Length: 72
Image (cartoon, rainbow, N blue to C red):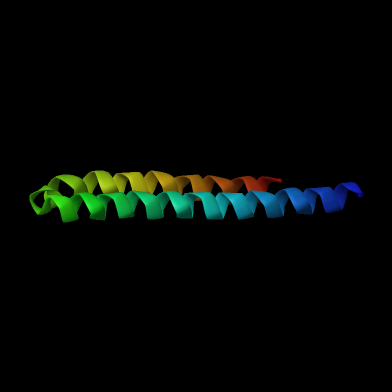
């Protein structure tokens, strides 16, 4: 393989992992929060903000991978 095809492969792998893994993380964060609210509905107000913060931090990882791809 030449250098250009290796660069394209690296970009593709970065985008694939950088998009899939944060999506799984966000899904798990929200699923666990909904499970906790289902078990204890009074905790919904206390769980909402940490759930959103966790989802935002997981989404930031996807944005970082996008930035890495554009800098490669």
